[in-house]
Image (cartoon, rainbow, N blue to C red; front, side, top):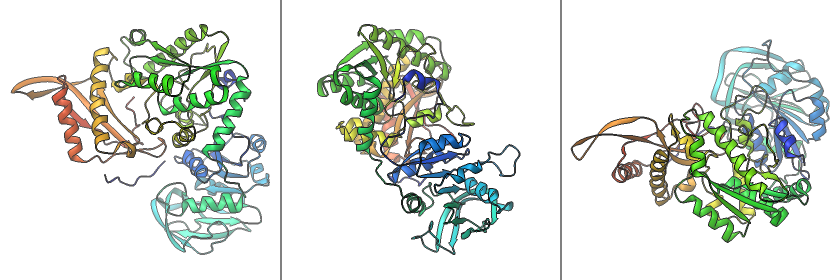
Length: 540
């Protein structure tokens, strides 16, 4: 399958975690850290992700978090992200000058570089022509930051303001098609800036530049790995839980599975997993989850058949955010009921990821794209302390941890599945048992054909959507009025952005033919070719 290259734009008590900033996640205790300050750029989360790929822990914080909070973390370096504002706008995010006096290297990217240049006496002005997309970069002085890169290279730009002259004492390192100063540095002051985006795939030497900053300039030890994540989280879980009893909401997806195994490794039989079959899962998944954890991993497991209960709560509900919050709240209620049967259980494990936290409205000015049932859907009267060992991790880091823990490959590489399940894939209508069963059968056909074609691992997600519409068709010389099934398949690195997958035409034809032939209620199959952004991966 040919894929189009795409730009990838992403030991406190749990009751305290619910009240604090959604981006306040626990950083590892025994590894170097680099802080990324978010000035609102579309690629800000990706900067943190790329730093981690270099083996250095990184966390994304709002630009106004304050110099004391940055100092408290004792980072080895500081990165200022890009952003959509003009440095001259009245309401533009500003740079605290004290951040440049912490005695650590600073790297400004795009808007971050413009802030540095303006604050330190350089000349930043609006250019006659903005620079968006690929640009040619000419390196005139490699200096320390661009060492080891060629004199002529391509890079990815996204800006309108431009640095025309560096601050006094700084060296201009490079220029681009529309940027007289596209990179600058002051080795003596430990301050560096680049106008281009090193974090995206269209900047071929971007990761090299980040590695140079992290390793050669900041002196970071590149020790961030799945193995030390496991060790660090086990220590944190034991410190938080002590000898208390813990329950884990187990869905069978990679997130909750890895979270459950981490906690089980830390506290053993103090953990009881609660698997809630809410009737919103894919075909046969309930049996698979019970078999894997109860029989293979020997983890204490309680299986709760709650399909009728959840469908009753969802009766008449069509609005997606309402569905998410109802399902999230009902999950908690079920857990509370099961916990009441377990004397002393007061901790709840959830597989919350960093991307869940960000998309649920973390950071300054960040929009709530959708509420995740384990972030934005928690009830106010939560009776548990949350244990969230994956809260600081991206999805691929979770997979690495799962492999480190010995999780079977089929579970490690299982495609993401939303916490609210198929309810949010019944779009625009009520999630009735009849609609859910139809969607389950259609999805089973899709997954079967994707696996037969050997494409399952190449896709970030592949699933079906059942919109609340019907269309006219012709089958057996008779008029039909049936359901429409939408095929959604995407590629992605971390779910912060995604590109629609170019599935082979003959595969699509086979999938559509099977759905229409095997599912009497379906008479039309369509393909969603929207990337993220502007769309999201899920429809709701």
